[in-house]
Length: 132
Image 1: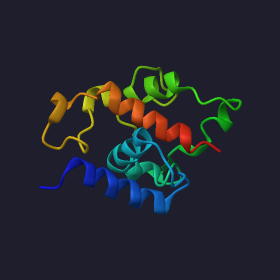
Image 2: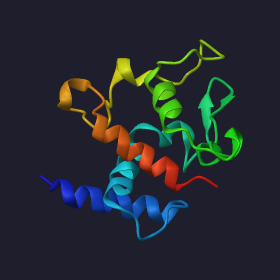
Image 3: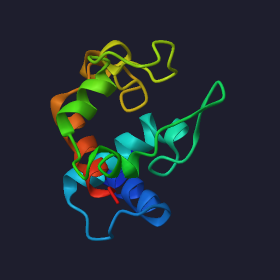
C-alpha cells in the first residue's frame, strides 16, 4: 500500500509536467491536482480543452476568470460543480457532484461518498492557480 503523501507527490509531479501549474505549488494546489486528475481530467483534459462527450465541448477551465470579466468566482464554480445552480442545458453531461461524490478519489466509498469541503477547497485552489 502506498502512503497518501507518496500518491500526492506522484499526482502533483505528473500533472505539473503536463499543465500550466507552477512547479512551486502549495499543498492545497497539489491535492487539488490529484482530485482534478481523478474527477475532472477525463472530460476537461489538462485544465479544459477536452470533449465532454455527446459532441459537447467541455468548458476551458483555465479561462473561467477571463470569461467572467477577469474574476474567478469560487462560490459560483463550487455551486455549479455541485449541481446547485440552474444550468443552461439541463441535459449536460457534467455530473452533479452532490449526487455522485468524488467516486474516483474515494473508490472505496471513503467520506461516505460525500464531497468534503477541504477537498473542494483544494480543487478550487488548483482552478484559481491555472487561470489565464
